[in-house]
Length: 224
Image (cartoon, rainbow, N blue to C red; front, side, top):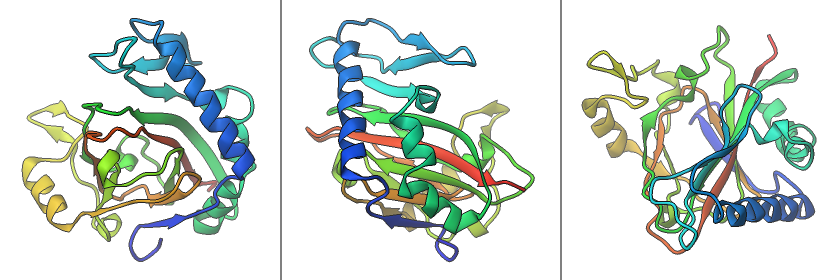
């Protein structure tokens, strides 16, 4: 984690907890078939459940669940009481602050593409010990919209996510070309977690497969 800016570890949650998370997420996807737009309210006023353009009952395109840890167990358990939390403490602890969470989904055939960026730019801290933990709710690989990271980029400072005076959320075309030359894919089985430094450049492509790709994403920082 310190040298490359990321590491992947299996067993971040128990098999029973993983099955519970998967079942609840499946229920939300099924509910989305009855919806034409996002629904539900988070504490800060966003839709809890966000749908991708092109969503239909026959081909559901739920792409995000905002702040699921505001909902009682099992999501809070995964964030605070599972082995995942101990792994985070090993990396940036011992004292750790929870920042926020979300679920990013790429349903089969989903068109969502995430450009290269650094999470630190979205939740800046004075302490650079900020970590993103990406819990794999499904088996993840390059074929179903898996994550790509740029090893060592966490030691190279911040890239601007502003292009022509507009916050694009992604790096410039020149920086993107450099990222693509160096990027490596992240893969793992459901229940594994990718721990990623806040300054790590990363991206993901569309899901061209027939398999879903769900990530329960938690951001933490050192308590100081």
